[in-house]
Length: 347
Ligand SMILES: Nc1ncnc2c1ncn2[C@@H]1O[C@H](COP(=O)(O)OP(=O)(O)O)[C@@H](O)[C@H]1O
Ligand SMILES: [Mg+2]
Image 1 (cartoon, rainbow, N blue to C red):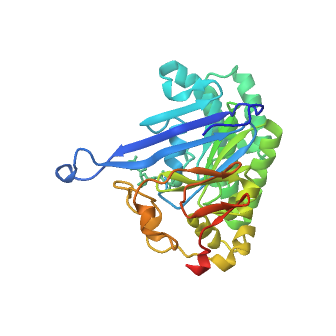
Image 2: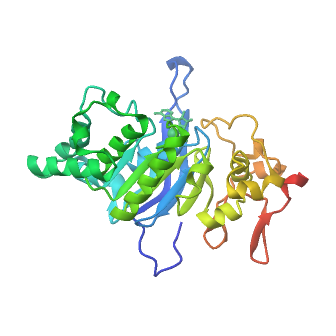
Image 3: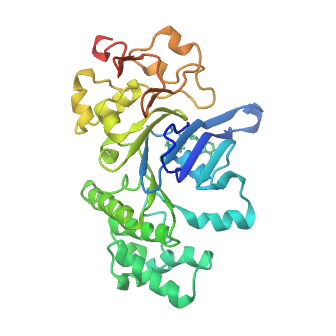
């Protein structure tokens, strides 16, 4: 995706046409040599330094795999991932090891992501030791500082994970992710496993840390309500591809792809969801298999406004109004306003 505004600062993260294909698992004899799972199939996005891109989509749409590929924790089949001036996909060995401190990830599950036999302080210290950052005394100071930064008390570093609540454990994970002073933090469903009452606390903490430290977030969620307030831009993924991408305000005021509208209608508390209540779409059925994805629009089989032409050939992601990209044939721009060709309630 090209940035047309030449005065804009270069993005911190630029992902171009990323593909991650996995050989299909299963019994050897039934496996055809060319069967691959197209987990991520041509994804492009950019994130400006200090901002947040939310990636939203149902389970299985390729969000985690995209994030892992950015982190160089999943194989990059094709495409490029650039962090600042660095082509992450081209790094190997020591160069890759050194680049790793610039990007960190916070996983969904605050329980399984911490070693139960390791004290909280040692978990936070581990990346510093792995990267040989500072002297021992400097690392001790840094660990205490990180505990304070995430809203824990430095004395708590001597406790074990089971002595913390779920929210506190996620704070430990965040402290660990921040230890090496990363520029990019990937948050993969960081509050999905937490009680609703605790979620806002962790989201507020992430927002505070972003302001204080100038962090850039790639924030993954299956829940529109979670990302509504915290992102600058949003990308909606469906079956390995981005189907809609826009600045937050534009997206929530006018979600265009029928799949985005369906995700919104599932959360009536979201502003746009309410506004679009008249066009509520309920998702039925499951997405098609990422092994043989449909040739045309991948959502056509579940889409209330699909017509035969939607399935005929791949649908490009089009920039319909400035910054608002949609992969759907059934949207028109009339007098500068993008809108569905057919109102969904008429379908
Ligand atoms: N290591 C792997 N091997 C084979 N298939 C995988 C692997 N990791 C993920 N997949 C498949 O890739 C698709 C996308 O998965 P994932 O990125 O975890 O989606 P999400 O995070 O959006 O739920 C799914 O169909 C999943 O089964
Ligand atoms: Mg996931």
